[in-house]
Image 1 (cartoon, helix red, strand yellow):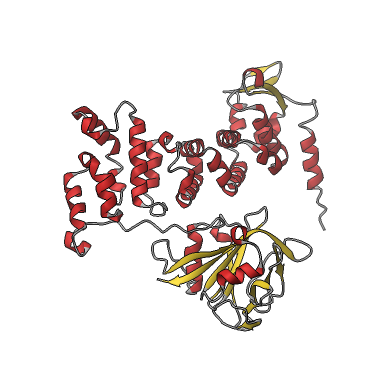
Image 2: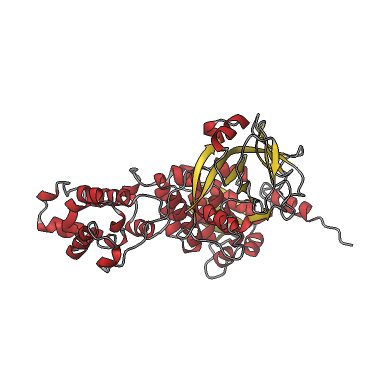
Length: 471
């Protein structure tokens, strides 16, 4: 038998932060009027961080009156205190993180990278992923630039870029875009999942290029040779990334052709020829496929539709990618917009064939839902199929948290006038309010949905229904 008092030990270590005794480290965090003296214990810092082991070594240490002196003017005091509390007791107060401004969260990111506290690096990265929309919405440029400069967070950069591709309105067609550095814009335009029409991408690229050279006027006919050369140089890495063959003839002539002086002549001729050619094969050109279609959803991302498609076709060993999804997903109902009632659900969704329902749990990233290959209707009866399923993502931002369970072929979906979508005795949407009832698992035996309240009900922010149409 083992007695475990580690919680008590951690609490005692945390008290050391508030007791002005026994310290042998003085840290000056912040600068000017915001500077603060923070006291700590070198033995704890050195055990927990390689950075501090190096800082307090004989070669680097700065000591005064027997105490190590560390000046960190680049890290504000309240950010340093968050880090210090983690070092002492392994705690991160999410409530405090939620109160930080985007700029402060990014400062925290830079600080944990500099201090090289690996566990905290993982923790902060997960927090930023879970709250990426708030961060990118408030300050997309600073967020991208910060992460771009930190090799440790390359995974976070990829996630941010994917999030912007999924919701390009965060950056495109805004004043933020013109402040974006060229390498980051290039990274975005290389992606297949940038959900914008190609002509919109071209318009934004042209606006960005003018912003890099404000002295160059927009009247192309008045450019001199030097100005043409400057603009060509600015765009030379971007032109190959634009999928010109996905731009309509009208848009090309109206918005692209006026800039023909910036395009390779053979490219312009081939594009013009493509509008009269019956097939692309006639042109013998290497034509990039269109970018992935945009999905109308407030809850999930494009990648989820690839996963849903795979589950519909029971491809459990490998998923479709965004290029080869064999279905269209048409939004036909959103509770927050159309009205959260059984009546509206049936008005919008009945007799539409196969549908998939997606719901988001209130104040979390937990999503769940179900797929029905059968019509919803007002028959006040259950229907049976082996092809329906229900699913969960404990974290919608992490596809590895996905779980799916198929019907056992009995009482698969319920069609009742007074209720929204029903999956067996398992999930029943109560059409009179926003609560979803968690029921019995017999009809979908291979999955368990997390109960998020003692009553067995799940409070949701919203739910959406998509009609599933075979391409």
